[in-house]
Length: 576
Image (cartoon, rainbow, N blue to C red; front, side):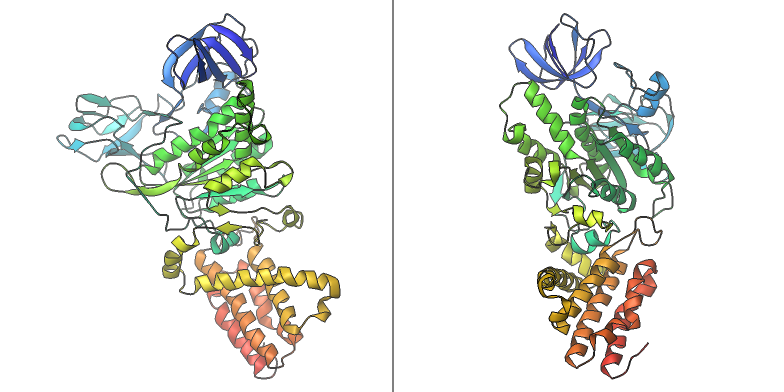
């Protein structure tokens, strides 16, 4: 029985309640979750609008925690924060979500063609793959034995089944394609390994300067309008992950609308198939109930872990964890908990750590042996762009990549607007062996020299503001010119150009190597007395400027061309 209603918080007497249990409230059977127990009273955070609930209404315990349904039919779907399919809700209740609506997360009537991979008499255990379903042309959905079940395969049948029909009997227990998993509980991984392979995003400033590993965690903080959502969209579109889980957590409705309109039209760069065939969208916008916002990131993480356990490389985008933290703060205030810094609950840091620690890569449970990874990229929207606020600082403690978005760069229309002087990646040492083997032996040196040039430019800019560019030496003017080439010809990237929106690792390396060769050879030429203006007018400068619009083979010729053209200037005479 309900005793108190305070916004999204309801206090009720619930028989046999445990923390985490799902509760149905009132005549409309609204969904809520027990977050605190005090004596006979349970505090329930409600995932729907509570207007209309009154003292004395019934509160019924379902006896199970908030869980996701895991089965074929999830890929390409759009869910709300508690995994209710928005398309099915629209059919049932129109354009607005009716309170108390109960729609299955995954369609129960659709039949899937199941292909067994084990036979009768085989012994299987938790995590073992017993068969597969071709869910989309890009995703082969592998059916795994649920946790807690093991034994001999007594029967297994190929054919077309719904997700609830029995496909096998193992150890006397019937198995279907449908599993349920509590969203707040991590799925086990057999052996966690260091992240040693980069998640290739095609974004030059990320892949070349501040890469993220598959299985890593990244923080993307920035003020309003700095381009957080744009970067996450680009990574969702172009990263080489096998599956994308995009969580719109408390963001503006128009931004999520853009995602929902754009993704079905986009093509996966590797296969040419629609990108939605390897994407799961979770939309919990700012006008939806705030308690469901708190649950949405866990819903996304549980789904992502499930596909990781199949052996896929999964990338999860959470946009934005600030809105998630605001939901925590509101619920904490309603519960009358002691507030921490800036009103956030004292457990903010541990909750953020628990979420980001769900990332990682390694060997999955079960047979056949396989490896999977889950990469988590969370954006943070600090008020006024203040990076010292609690959500940013607690996130930086647990993530190893920091892409500092710069409002000034965004206003200059320089995208991606990642500040190259403030950002960092702690995965460089782990990724270096892979990059040296797969891209080039000197890739680390090329990166370090380029970052050194950009740092020198920042120092020289202060001097130039005071005394003017004519007052510094030709060598220092060359530093400014080469740094400008890095900024404008390499770091700037157009999301609208069909060639420039994605760059392979080797193309990125050759572009950067060409600028480095230009700078090294030009420095020697200046020492030999060649005029700087003559160097600036060399045709290689224009060729490097156009490199981002060229194919990989053409760009690969640029480093050698830079060396020969500047060498020709040293020999005396302009060479075109």
